[in-house]
Length: 67
Ligand code: FES
Image 1 (cartoon, rainbow, N blue to C red):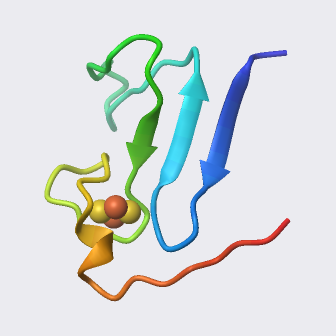
Image 2: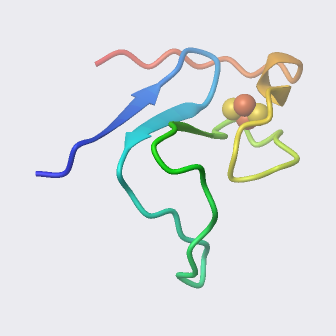
């Protein structure tokens, strides 16, 4: 089993931790800092998609997902 975790942050991004490949829509690899978690935007406001750039704090995004 892969050792990857995805945490849905309240009112914010998806925080992805572990070893994984991040690919664009054509399947090409996207650069990321190996070993560092990445935050993927889920509010739609980021100017650096698919990554979170913090703009969720200013766009009124609200989402709290409970397991
Ligand atoms: S979740 Fe952070 S900019 Fe969208």
